[in-house]
Image 1 (tube, rainbow, N blue to C red):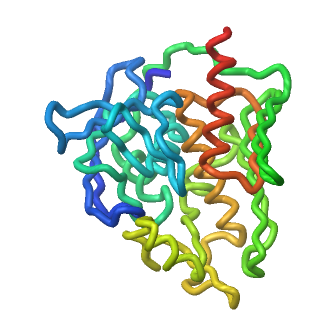
Image 2 (tube, rainbow, N blue to C red):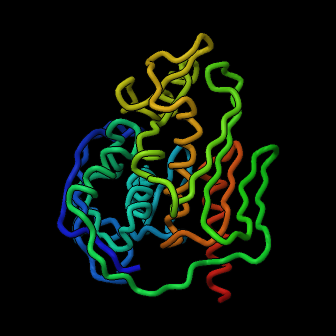
Length: 276
């Protein structure tokens, strides 16, 4: 813990769900400050910390809230920061939703790499479960299993032939997040677009920032990986688990899961941390 970006960087774009253009500026922060958002568009620039305790709603994205101050769709940026070793960061944003960019975490990772990170590591004990933690909802589940190293494994299963049953596993100590996980884009289904838009969601969604699947196949190929959807779900899991502050020493498994289940698992792990 304790690493931060060497200098600030910023990226701009539309938010996936609200379709409003926002700019995010990531700045160095003091060791131990953690990752936190600052709503610079609001009076007194209120802060929303990136912690399990500040999670608001989890419908199709993860939202953080401090009172009535919200920051939505934080998972791709937070995944990029934690996976690149950025423990502390001041994230200034001039709106309610982090821009979706190309639907992946690729641009965030490139920006972090371009500025570099400091080496101020502080010793902190990782959360290490000694027995399995399971959370199940019908045939979906998330789990944290005792392990000697951190590993993330995600599985998905959709009736669409182009997707079907897919799995991907990632070990942060051995495999590159920037190469293997970050480029995987968010995905959706042609038949659900109108329904979601009527519900006020995916207002900023387009074929430039999401893979769209239909009964006949992918509408906007090519894919960046044969199992790009599974890798993207893993990206989301990494972002949600980042709310613990650092990765737990465990094998984290998600099958047909959602942000809601990811956060429930993070909350269970956080409880374990508080008992130490």
